[in-house]
Length: 265
Image 1 (cartoon, rainbow, N blue to C red):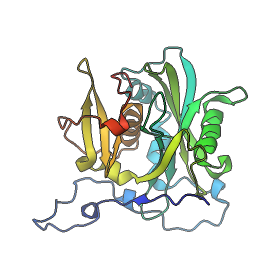
Image 2: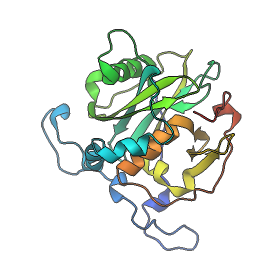
Image 3: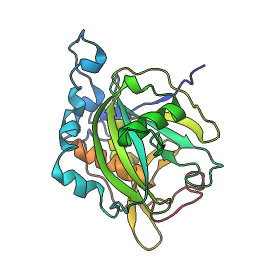
Image 4: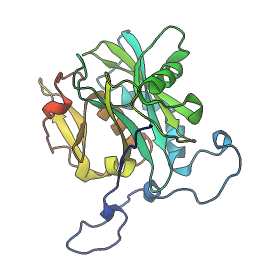
């Protein structure tokens, strides 16, 4: 049976206008449509419907020249092995969500890490989109006809594994039940509300050996760091959802999510 993935709910104060002293004040400038959806109904097939309003800015900025500079900070491609991941947005109510996989704790590399579905290029893949489609199907049973590609982020290098990774950004216009297809590689699937990733209370910084820093996200008992956190941070910026947060809030990578902790990941 398809796995029932728990939805990670957004904190109440993001939708509450109360100024009660027991609750944090609403975030100034918080993007309200992260908790809403388009109300108009469209009878056309889902794949031909307009992109939801919450994703339209992101779709435009994915093709902007400054996007390359934003994504490639310290991660310019090195001509390494090709790989691709899928950043898949589900825009159904109550709020937009992203699909993540949790890697198996027994893997030689990336053990326990939270990541986007994806993997290395294989013969027959039609570019990064083909790789992302195939890998998302193999890892999480995502059907390739259930989403529409909005764009592809510039390829980023991961020196720990030697891969140059392209990120395919897509709208999941026809969401369907998904499941762990390969328990040897994937331990679990997680759908996380975007507004929880945006929330400053869930953001932190990882300090790597050598002094370099990178973003991290703390969602309940999950810890997102490394390339995936770098990509999520970039997507939030490109979509115009960023809310000021404390970059000096340093958190170590828990052993569960970083058994092969490496400063270049």
